[in-house]
Length: 527
Image (cartoon, rainbow, N blue to C red):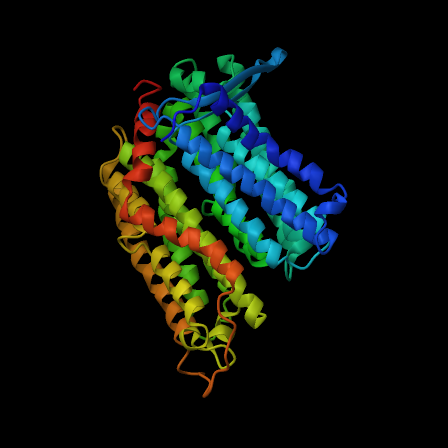
């Protein structure tokens, strides 16, 4: 690591949050004559790559300057009074919990901007596309960086409008209905969440998340904690998404453009689970303990439900959409994250945070790959991909087939890859939940989660067999050649592969950051 002064660290974090908004405004202006390149469209796409690349560089510098010997302490902090009447402050900072999410978000946005430079989805003006992408980046980065409840809510809501338009204007079939379903579900959840946040702030006299976490709910009555945890939990559960509040997700993923699906799975789903860890666990521990068994039950059901839905879509003759299948797989994977959080133990919460990062890397890669398949075949229908018009990727596009097989085995939790550690730690946390929680109930959830891992392996291996090896029932006699991985695809996907392997072989890189911060968070702000 390198020694960076506190003032520079403070500037870097503020820059990371604010610069995408400035970049979005500049994207809408005419390009300077010397920077137009071949066309104004190329200029604005290059602008998107440049801005997201600078943000990624700043996030890497922030990570290098982060004091890794004190990951439980908030660093690069800014604390300025904003609305005095409500005691709302512009309070920013990162610790070992938020830093990995911040870095992964910056990486995924850069890779999506790079991919879009070469493969822009069909739709209206590229200027609007780049501007919306940058506004979306600012909202997601701010959500992981702010330390005030009302600012958290504003950043949490800031992502809805750009994602709505990315789906509605640049998506595929049924995009309008999917976009409306996405925004209605999330807005309704957010209204309930806002009531819970106001309940906490007005009863405790502050919206500062650091002060509230240190207080550990001592200023809030048990009834207040229950009501706040329920209201905030519903809003966060919709965004996660938790079964049975997940129904917007498959439609949104199926209709979204490739980069929209990557960002929806890799970044937006993390906002909900991050809120559970950052807000509910330390600020309303009494309410969280009451609802934890129910959260664990919903998580366990979600694990099995998502896997069974994927198995049904993967079966021959069901005309399952591969993007929809991966969307349902996210319901199962996020179930492991929620189960880890519900245990209220350091082991379980660390597993949840690890699974968050792993899911972002692996599922982001899967949506990139399915988008490439859809570009080549004109469909993501699994029967078509596995049948006479698209059998045996290994023979037709071997590198594309190898990438898809790698992403699938990483998603099923193969030891040695990132997907393994988070799910294993979540199950270990359920084996011995926090004091006061029913151990028999959580042992049941652990057993159900273990069954879910087997079902996950089943449907992902079926997908690999059918798409990569071809369907023996309808295999073509002489499959035609297919364009293999292009240079821009290789550039966008390789970092995700490398990080999936790194996190799988060296989990201490991530756990060394999260564990001290989680220990402090669960101890009520005391190390």
